[in-house]
Figure (tube, rainbow over the protein chains, first blue to last red):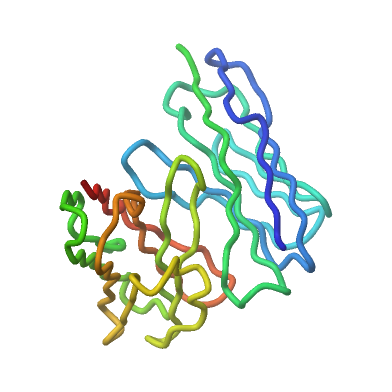
Length: 112
Length: 113
C-alpha cells in the first residue's frame, strides 16, 4: 500500500526565516510526486510536479526537490502570505492508474 | 478560464436525507476526481472518471454513495441515505490527462445533523 508521510505537522516561522518541509513516501514505482498548497476554505492549489529523482522545480520563494525516498519543499525568505497547508501526493505504478495518495499536510504559519 | 466549479458550497441536512453534490470540470479535461477531506483521514480519493467512464471506485465508502458523469461537463456525487459520519468537505478535481496536475474546486462543506 502506498504511504506518504509529511513532517513536521505544523511549522511556525518568522518572516524571512527559511526552512524546509519533508514528504517521505513508500510506493512501488513512483510515476509522479505533486505538491499542493491549500488555504482555509479553499481547494488544494497545484504547485509542482516531480517525476524522477534529482529533479528540481522552482517558483518564486519555493523550490521542490526529489530523491528516491522523499521530497523537500524549500521555502526561502518566507512572507506571511506563504502561510497555508502544504500537501504532497504521489502517483504510483502499482495503484490504479491516475489515483493520487495524499499526505496529511504541513500547516505553515509565517509571522510578520 | 473558469476553474472547476462545485455546487453547493455548503449543505446542511438531516440524517436520512438524500444529498447531491455537483461538479463542472475544466473544459477539455479528460479526468474527473471526487475526494473527501476530514480532519481524521485527510484527503481521500472516492472515485475517478476517464472520458466519463468510472475507472476506480474503490474509495467509495459504501453503497450509500454513488457517482455519475453523464457528459464531459457535469458530474454528481450522491449520498442516500445520508448519515452524520458523512459530514466532511467534498472536493471535485479535473486533469487534462493522466499524470497531469489535478485542479481542484473549492469544495462542498457537508454537514449531516
